[in-house]
Amino acid sequence: MSVYLDNAATTKPCEEAVDAAVKMMRENYGNPSSLHRAGLDAQLVMDKSRKVIADSIGADSSCLYFTSGATESNNLALRGIAGAYGKRKKKIVISAVEHASVDETASALETQGFEVVRVSPRDDGRMYAADFVNACDENTCLLSMMLVNNETGYILPVKDTFAAVKRRFPDIVTHCDCVQGYMKLPVKVTAMNADIISISAHKIHGIKGVGAIYIKKGVRVTPVITGGKQEKGIRSGTESTPLIAAFGAAAEKLLPTISERYKTAEGLKSYLLDKLKDVEGVSVNSPEDGSPYVINISAEGRRSEIMLHFLESKGVYVSSGSACSKGQQSGVLGEFGITGKRADSALRVSITAETTQQELDAFVEALKEGYEKVRG
Image (cartoon, rainbow, N blue to C red; front, side):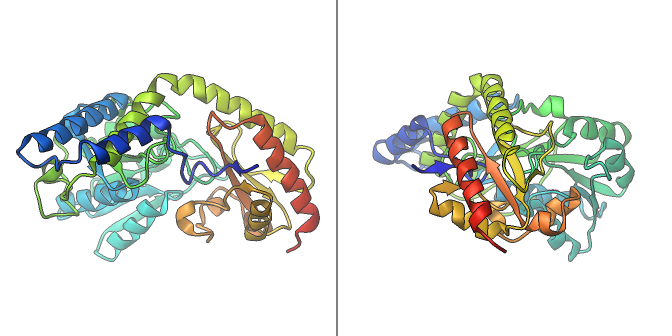
């Protein structure tokens, strides 16, 4: 039996998404920029998906733009704001636990003369709005803060932070990487005080290769990809209508059941943590009140990569951290106070509401066996 517990890296596409993509490839394959009927038919499907996704975040569909994925959306958010406002304001504030697509983009902007301030969790492992407010000033053009940390499941105080920053510095643009929160937690741009958010299809049972960015009306961004008028010039290049149709289908399917699926995931997380109490050497790195979809643990004294491949040999698939890090430590765990051998042995288990207790049982049994057999 294959047990897939790496859903924070990617999810299995749902049937609705696959069917929508196949239909576009087989029947409705026109270029949405073409002026003839085939192009219009493709455009209509794209418009429907745009509206479905925009509605799901409480946004006007005219403010939603399709990209190749959340990495591109995050790049567009940071580089686009830096390009539009960076002549006058040269400071960017981010959390110290951001995904690499934000953190490394911020580092690249540092080489272009921007000051980047990374706000870390306090000693209790939590982040506070006041620390972000204090990091901002009149020279700050952008605050970027993820909703759910992709390695630990920690839920960042985005709503409170953005509200506090806006009260003191109303002109600062707020950006949220919502990839691990979208369709798991309620994501509403107005309630979050978010000027820009990034989301991805393949984390919500869509298909890899498409994402979206919401940009509030009145917020200026300098395009990163130029060369056409697609997406109002914000993101040039022929849109992938099969992937966009699949994205819309997945969002439409999941939206009505966010609360129900969250409760299911909470039950599964509780079940797993209870089972792990009987496993020697295992400690839990994720906070109790974190997202139930991401559970980070350590089997101390057993290096992550070695344990990961042992589990793989048993048909159990987890990860040692962010899939984008290719197994390299990102430093995020250290920011949360998880260091040394405990960090070296960290494993990320990420579930969906469709994960079963039997799958979690299989993981725990394989982990027990691995702890006995794996050394180093």
